[in-house]
Image 1 (cartoon, helix red, strand yellow):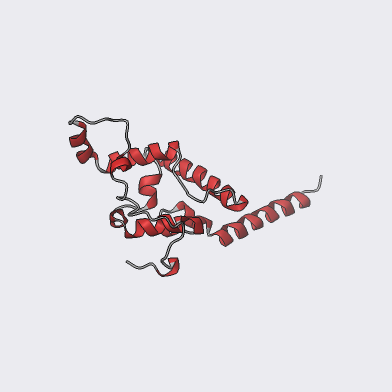
Image 2 (cartoon, rainbow, N blue to C red):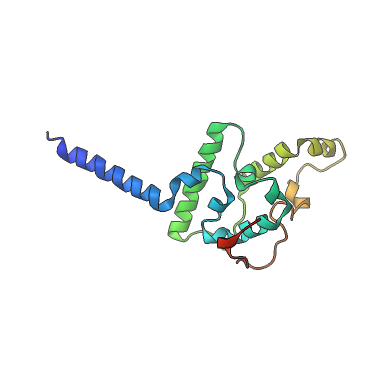
Length: 161
């Protein structure tokens, strides 16, 4: 059996993979820069709110939205979430108002506690109902005030701190 078609097929596949990686700037998605999360226009409002909120100086998207249990859990969830986003944006099936699902809410809650462990420990020692998430009371902390607009008013090309 001739090996030439197999070699040509492998080379063509690798070429397509390299072009896809170059066109989509795929290596950037392995990092944790907030600007990468804002590549899709549907995230403009979330990025805008975070940019002007108090957490912008201390936390990036991945600090809150990705599990930090270990290296494998971090990149597995990052890849899973990224592929879901690619599918949603490619098919146009993303919702107009983006909301965290149950899994993401659990991850964010765990990360709030991870970063604010001392504060949370003080709160836990008092009489509190534990059926709430941190953002039930601290709604504007991570992403700032929320308006009714789904579109940002700030040019995403010229963000400067």
